Structures are given as C-alpha cells and as structure tokens.
Length: 371
Image (cartoon, rainbow, N blue to C red; front, side):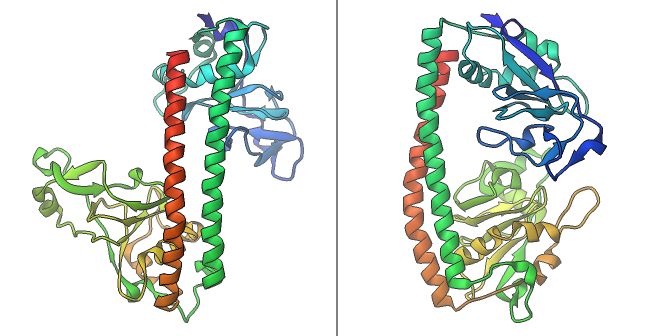
C-alpha cells in the first residue's frame, strides 16, 4: 500500500478571475468541476485567458467537491478551478492507467472524508494520504489490459445504443417533420384536447401506515431523461396512503412527465402507478398514441424547461402543460411509428442486456483487483 502523495504530484485547482472567462477560444480550456466531464475527457465550454492552476495533457483530473470522486483525463493543457485537482504520476513504479482504475475504487472512501456544511469537499491532504495497492509493473499492466478490454466493449455497446436512438429520431422526423414544440403552431392541438393532465402528491412520511404497501409510487429521482417503459417503483404506498392525498391512479400507457427537479424526464407507464408532486402526467385520449407523445416530449426537453416558472426552482404547472400545443398526425401514421419503434426496441433490449452483463463483469474484476 502506498499513499497517493508518494507517487503523484497533486495540483489543487483554483478559479481564475471571472473576467478572464470566455467562450471564443481565447486562452486554454477551463474546467471547474465534473459537470465538464465527458466519457473519457472533459468537454471545453469555457476558456480562460489568465489561468492560475494548470493541468497538463495526461494528468488525471478528479472532482474534489459536489460530488467528490468523478475522474477524467486531461487531453490537453487546461486551467482547473477549485472543484478539481490534477494528479501527475511522478514515479516509474506506477502506471497512469492503473492509477486511474485504482482511484475509481476510492470514491466512497473519499466521500466519507468530505467536510463542509453547504457541500462536501476534500482537501489536498486527504488526497495525499489516500492509499492504494501498487503491485509490480507486470501485474499492473495485466490488470489494465483486462479492464481496458471490458471498457472498450462497454463503449461499443453505448455507441450501438446511441445509433439505435438516432435511427428512431430520423424515422420520427421523416414521418412527422419538424418536432420543435417552440413553434406552437395554431393548427396544433392543446394537450388538454388530446389527454388529461394528472399530478400527484406525497403521503406523510412520518405515518408508517402510508408506506411499504403494494401500490407503485414514483418520484422524478427514479427516472432517467428517457426511461422508456417503466414497470416498477422503488417505493410503495398503501391504500391508506393513497386516500390520505386523494391520489389519482395513472393507468397503463400514461405518459409520465417530470415537472420539476428537473423538468422534462419522460416515461411510459407499463403498469399502474401513483406519483409525487413532481409530475404533470398525460393520460392519452384515442387521438394520440403514448409512444408518439413520449417521443415528441423527449425531443423537446429544452422547450419544456423554458416554460418553467419559480424563484427557488423552476416548475411547470398543470395549466401550462394543458396549454402546450402539439402536432397530432393521423393515428395510422402514429401506429406505423409505434411498430417501427417496437422493432428497434427489440434490438435495444438485447444490447442493454449485453451492456448490463459487461458492467457486472467490470465490477467483478474491480472487486478482484482492488478489493
């Protein structure tokens, strides 16, 4: 076991003067935290003409606050803000790629050592004192080779899934034309004309009789931005919980739409559900197929967010959702799109299963190598 401070130079970030920020490429890329992180490298959004702390190509960037532990490689010289630290391997006894994988196993430990009232952060000393196993170079290389092979397969599965999503989007545009809801054309239908908008509520959490029942109850935190068909919920409520809030059941086929924290997560109910107050769901009439409406909303997250109101956090109300105008093509065209989407979903399910198995394989290898 060795400490990171014994094998790395640790460079804690510091945010430069805000007047040096720009988005026209003046200076070098500036990364403030993990929000800039991509799959393997950060994505330049802001540049800095007068950097204070600099990371170099090949350095490992680690988020030291909000949240702690996300990592990326610096693919070029860049400026790092106080949300990041850069680690430069300074010994020939540790491979950089091995260190990358070793650090990913330390996220829980680093988070446990975070301090702060507003948000948790870790100091240079915490990073420096963090210990990892460092076997001989031959063993390190074998570990790296195994994990890189799995990572490449995981990346390939993700690319294949993205291509399927692109196919669906192309088909949608080919069949229905411009899907931009910000146009709000007068010939379109209001949501209130093609469905019923239904919200939800939260039974009192301090009443045990309301919880751990048999009825599915969801919150926005459980959904991805494009969850597809959802079948279950993490939490269940009782009949008494339902009655305490006069909750309305969401039937199968309801298009679920998060209305705050954040706005725009969408799903289709594959079972009956109840929900909390973070949704404005649409129970579709016979004029619109749930899959068509789901896809339309999925491609208009930016517009939906623009409708948000509120000072503390943005939210869209029931009346706002009811007034949104949407194009409603002939039902036969919608059905053709649904059939096409179902075919793609068959392939997507197989790829997702393969992806899940690869993730499980990686976790097993990480546990084997790093404990």
